[in-house]
Length: 204
Image (cartoon, rainbow, N blue to C red; front, side, top):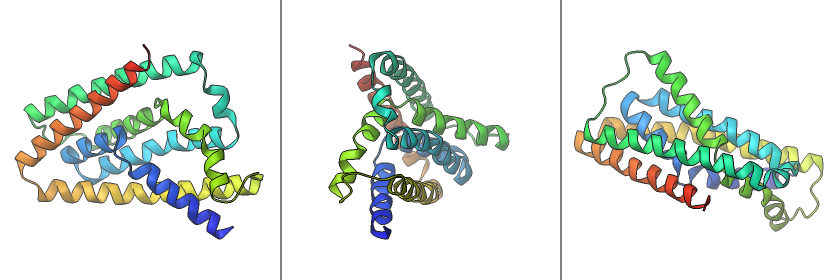
């Protein structure tokens, strides 16, 4: 069972370390306000990760994979990603100053991470396919114990990644020049707008 836990942790690291909207928003917030907002974007995303993981591991993700659910979720995701992409490109043009109110910045960062994760329609597909991933690591018919161990391993690695990612972003913030900050904001904006476009294409 310990090896199963380690396999779940590895899948969690792969899932969380993949570049995407949450990482781009973590980078954008971290460049402006440092370690804490970057960490809170990551921790906020755990709300969505835990929700989708629980639904997927109990089989409910398959029930949610319908047009009635996916269409509004995809639309919300596309609009939110486009808004964040616009903000990032604006920041590239005029790099923002650190927020005056750290409490507001922290709450906003947490909410952004949660919203990005909860509105990501790809999470439905990922967790609906998790049964096949379990079979690949030797558990063809998972018991409730297997599901609990897998969930624990995934969430432990996800939590660890929050601190690792925020630390790397804060290090980059301190080490990089203003030019690199602006280029990073621009890159994040392009990525977020690209993801928004990809989400919108799924509606056609």
